[in-house]
Picture 1 (cartoon, rainbow, N blue to C red):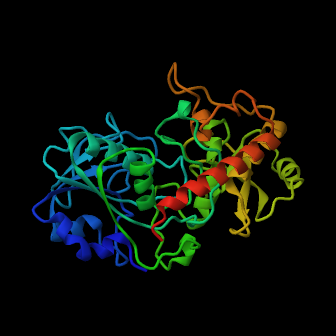
Picture 2 (cartoon, one colour):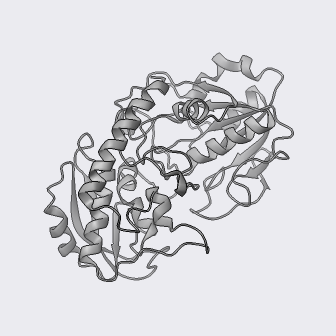
Picture 3 (cartoon, rainbow, N blue to C red):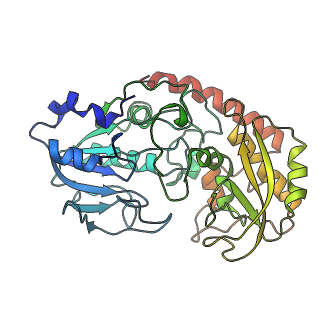
Amino acid sequence: MRLGIENIDDCLYLFKDKRVGLVTNPTGVDQNFKSTIDIMNAKVNLCSLFAPEHGVRGNVQAGVKLETYTDKNTGLTIHSLYGENKRPTKEMLADVDIICFDIQDVGCRFYTYIWTLAYLMEAAAEFGKQVIVFDRPNPLGGLKVEGNILNPKFKSFVGYLEIPQRHGLTVGELALMFKEHFKINCDLDVIKMSGWKREMYFEDTGLDYILPSPNLPTPASILAYAATCIFEGTSISEGRGTAKPFQFFGHPDLDPQLFVNSFNEYKLEGCKLRPVYFTPLFSKHKGELCGGVELFVTDKDVFSPIKTSFILFDEMKKVLNSFEILSPFKEGMNMFLELLVGDDFLTKQLLPLDAIMEKIDQDSHEFAILKKQYHLY
């Protein structure tokens, strides 16, 4: 197994006489934990860095805005892509010819790094820059697709282009789709991995797991995230501020056993719930004892995280009288739940649960056919 960055020596001709920028974070390392920043600094003319959500060094919590700053290790300027600007400006790109991307994705539409890549590609197309993506595995594997395709009326930084919640592509494959299918026509190269197979989950790769963001501490938390991220748009704690974010979720008024009993009536394969109590140290319901549940994935191959998410949502509405959908962050904006779902069929109660399941099946099938055109492995 070799990561894209570990195959850079085969592609150094791409960087000859070029000024290079790099979008990365702590997941941008080789298998000896050498930073992509240091690897590129030694091999190419690295001129500047670009920070996504959580920062280049991963020391910033979710949602915290960044400003331009200097990297202490290299002295390079770090331009923020998670502050006033989420896409590189002409000024940011003025002294680079190539901008590279090396970040570990988690395989979910509502995870922001892939949209940083899309914005980057749009800026590169506008300002005549080349984009090079160092490819990395999809931790949820490359076979399964699941979810409803984003309704473009609900475009945002947690869902910018029309893909489902579980897309089944690597970042390199997504970049090819962004260019060819979604017509972001920049000069693009993808430096492929070696030895990755589509059926691999992260645990199958032999790679050491590095947190892609502060609240995804384990590979198990990524599968849970795909199922419980939906609660970010509600009054339900998604477990931030606990030892098991996204695996724990709950509310101060929730009866854990009642919820588990109600959910178990679905007899879903591949997962089970355990009643728990937890007190978040930060985020929603900070310092309050919450009745909640812990999600266990017992069989990754049959677990359907997106279908499970809508069932969990439906059951939470039935069991918890104080359940609320959060108001928009700003006047005139869509509700955050609508942005996460990529549609308003939940907030406006347009579809019953069985119709949502049918829509997921139809959209997943449609996208599975499309995505095969962009498979590199």
